[in-house]
Structure formats: structure tokens, C-alpha cells
Length: 129
Image (cartoon, rainbow, N blue to C red):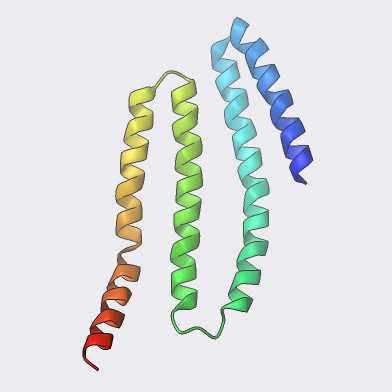
């Protein structure tokens, strides 16, 4: 699926959601959630291909595989939390969306802790020379 297909399908789903929302708002949210799940699966396929390419190109770097895993997890967490937060905002649940954003930031901080630890080790190694 290329970007033009994604754009066209997105516009069609958005227009359908507007028409459905007039009669039954619950079905409109359900349509959007189904669309998001389909688009996430499409995006994940592209992400796996991208991951393979990046892994091949940084294979010789010492901490690259570990950092790459963390980076990909962080990207996926950001994408999923942004989508779920936006869906909550669109359905009128702003407070739930804010909670998703806050929890996501906390999770990302804990996820990136190994990178910070390695950075501190490198800095300490530089000053011990």
C-alpha cells in the first residue's frame, strides 16, 4: 500500500465517519478504531522492512542492536499512544487522552534509561583517560 492509497482510504473513512456520526456516534468511533488497526498493521509491515535494513547497516557498531531495539520500541509506543490519545480526544474523552500522554512519557523515560546509563559510562570513560 503506497501513500496515495493511505490518503484516499483515510479521506473515505473520514467522510464515512462524519455521516455515520450523525446517526450513531458509537459506530463512527468503531469505524475509526477498525481503520486505525488496519493502518497499524500496514505500518508494522513497513517498519519490519525498515528494521531489517537498519540492522544490516549498523551491524558493526558495539551497542547498535541494543539501542536499535530501544529506539524501535519507543517509536512504536509513541505512534500507538498518539493514535489512542487522538481517538480518545475525538470521542470526547480528553482526560483519558491526557492520562495516556502522561503514562507514555513515563514509560519512555524508563525505556530509555539503558541508553542514559551507557552514555554516562562513555562520559566517565572519557574523563578517566
